Length: 274
Image (cartoon, rainbow, N blue to C red; front, top):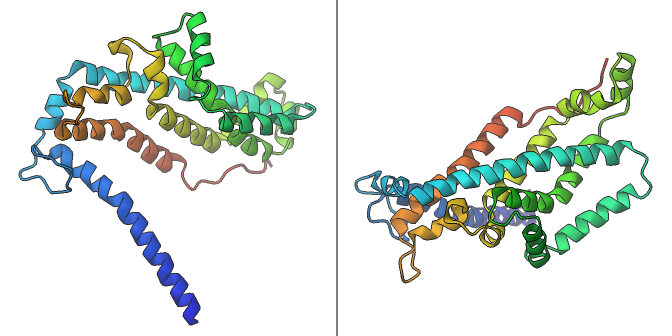
């Protein structure tokens, strides 16, 4: 191996180690601080470990309700986004629509350039006229609308990768056209649907601005907003409670990722019908 290759390899290892340390330190803090009755910003093993922080967090009714609201908003947006994106991707892939590729590209471009923050005023007015201010449905519709262009773009690749011979074989076997998507296409693009579903869930689970603006009642706020319950009057976080609440807040997303990775990770996609 030449000296230049060795230097490049060492440089890669060094940069990777630095990046890994940057991610590892906050993770270690999140794993230790919730179990420390005297948690600070320093990463230290609790002496002794305790669950008192979790007991105080779970005794806060608004904080627990916030976690349930986050689950409702994230699950509702995930289901709506995945279902509508699958229908749209199938239609754009199979129907002969002039300019379908241009339409998809423009939709993706405008959704990336014009973010939810920029469009929040007209979005707020639309939701207000629909009578959905301070409702979970309003948040789900807004979040799903913002995620749809990218979700359609992601699923379009999966549907385009399937030959039309699948539908032709199904038609020979007596299937109706309305059965192609649920009984032929959806089972074959399940990995893509799970990718979009997890991506949508994580995106809504961590959202702050949209629910903060559209929701008014304390009982409707998600966990990302309810986290301010654990700040003192001076605006400083109570680290023992914030760390415990953050641990509970991260747990569903982590479990969802591990489940999807176990269920669909590194699996074969598609296939040829015999």
